[in-house]
Image (cartoon, rainbow, N blue to C red; front, side, top):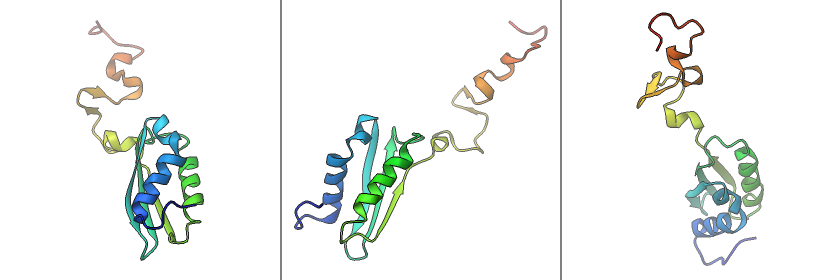
Length: 120
């Protein structure tokens, strides 16, 4: 279940993630234990990289939670996975970010079915 009880909880959770959840790194994801407090039993883990926007991140977080909640010193687990839209500023982001047009298909006005006389 857990590694040496002498190691801090944070290090044991990090070692477990590396050993038991290699799928995270295999898919270009990252994991970081932000908090692991044996006194209040709270653990906070952040997933990033390839986990951002991954369609199976819910399965991964569920598997992590199901295992770690069995540890006697853990009572509450929070796993944060950023939304893929956050990297683009979310739904309120301006239509263009660093020259990337966010309109449908990235076409902007050039994709019009009736481009008019100015079309190149």
